Length: 302
Image (cartoon, helix red, strand yellow):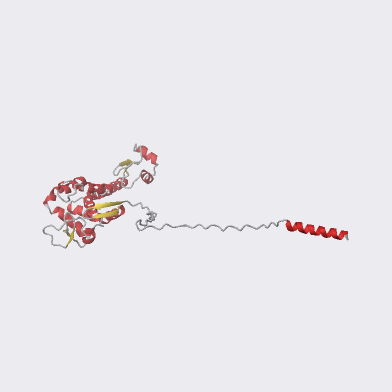
């Protein structure tokens, strides 16, 4: 009995201790919500206008060209490439040389004036009126005409059916007016005198006109066409000389003579083969220090 009472007291004591001990409750703290970042856009006021940064376009690279361009200023401002000028020269050089033969005007001057006055055929007057030399109507002109701004507004310029008529009229214009008579006292090969003479006679008012003509002549070697015309007789004489030398050589060969007259196209090698000689032997017989030969030269071949 005593043991039961002791056990009961022990249980009551333990229960009382547990009831007096405080109960600690732990709670997990709630996670703080992430703060949102709010961006505020400042609205422009009415007094401050909206400015935008301009977009800069990248420059487009132009394809490089080997052709040079130049601006020709005469009755109109024309931009052409040098191959256009070369094409113009090729197209009209025959007419220019023909006019030089018929009228005594240097072909180089004709072509240079054509290039300058017509913009190498690309100028307004050249396109609309086939006028390649900027010749105005003047008194006595009864042909067609066009109006074009030049020294004055809407001046009268001659119109032609084709460029060849313009080239012919240019020749008649210079040969038919007394103020240009002094030009024909100059040598046909002296293009500089002709260029300066045209300016002095009043063909153009530009003080640089002679320099421009001379520049075209020298840059594009237009003087060669003067030489071709001036050397016509020389070429004919050369042909006659070759024929005479050929006849002389045949005569010498038929007579069994020991010499040979050099003809056009001959070389030491061809002559040595013709006479069954070595080139060195042929040079030694004629005391030649090099291989240079000239038409009409007489060589010892035996």
